[in-house]
Image (cartoon, rainbow, N blue to C red; front, side, top):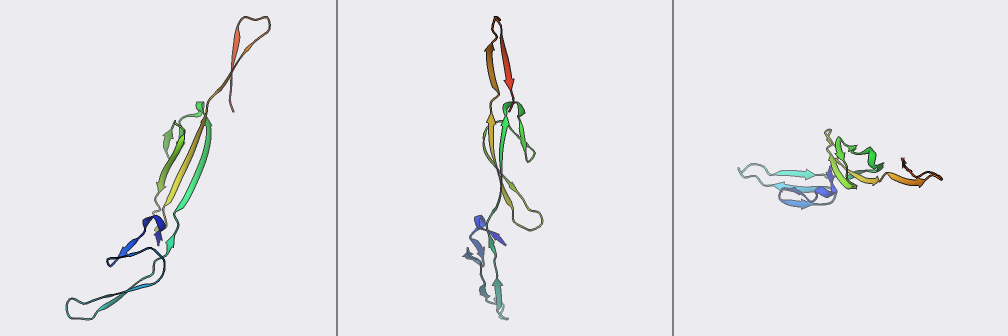
Length: 119
């Protein structure tokens, strides 16, 4: 099985980018019999897993796949499949909202009160 982003696959010196059945004859170099080899590739799309995270600034760092993130942005990671299947491209879209603050003057008071609102 081949993932599209790993193509072309080179087999016996020839590039292959599509699934199908390919036959190649390997000539004997010792005077014996030639060998017929067959390639049956299956081509799949890269698996993707997208996480859209929205956090407040006081919730940082944001932990994703064991790594800390403190700056808004798009991050990628490759999850390796150890059982012989396809790997997965993981994408994190991290949005960080600032803490909301508000200053209000109370009637008759000369001091202001600062409120910190969490979403």
